[in-house]
Image (tube, rainbow, N blue to C red; front, side, top):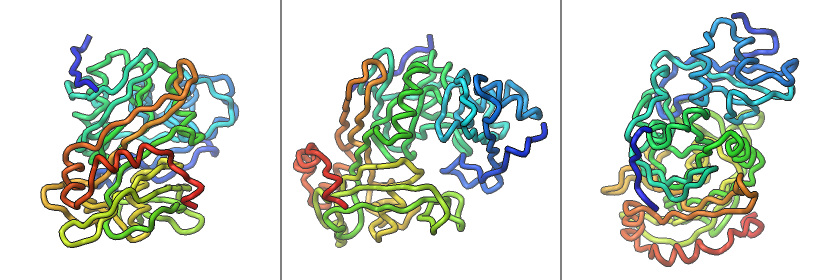
Length: 354
């Protein structure tokens, strides 16, 4: 792993309908505009940007290109390059961005920790406290801004090549595409759930030894900044596998160090799912987790990333050790972090969890 700060080298058709906006998850922005859903029927062979521009006559092409650059235009729930050719069967969601977003896609000297880099992709270890992508309340100083500074060529890709996110106060591994081909490949792996992501999570209470939480997630109707398990017919499907790696006690309370594996990637998924079974993350004030002296975030770290490399098709894997703040929290709970690392190195047996 190395630490790098590089030098900068109209009227909508009937097929369109409004959806709740999903930008600015970490900001209380109840007045955010609704998203627009567009069916791509009749757009076979057209570029994504040109097709959307033809359907949004009241949005300038310059602004639309900025929205695409920020990842505010999704195609079948994937962020894709503006030049992507449509098949005509896609569903496109456009999330209108406020004027403040117009200056967000700029390079800034935000430090980034590079775990691996080649001509196709970057694998980074994000520290807690760093916002991944500009959104309401965090238009500058994000990981995206740092990527544009580190590799200016990433300006040619939406979200500077970022294909998935971590919450601001979650640490750990992220993959970033460096080419359109890589971005399409990685987005497809996320969509078909073949990209493997494993997390360390310190949860409140004595969790069952292992299990699977299969519950849809939607925005909490009582608070825009929270997500929640959704009743039947609402939300998006989500499934989290977990197993207990160690147990301890923190400030007189039981605590369980879990390894979680995502079968989907919804906003705040692990946090919401663990809260739903009565075991919120330590330090997660948003979801009712207990506080811990000297620890000011949710105890969640993305420690392993596994994917099919877009260059040669081979499976590749990277690991990032637990950061010092979370390791210290585990030690305070009487948990042997080195032993946990050895236990996590084994395969995650999902069949045993069900």
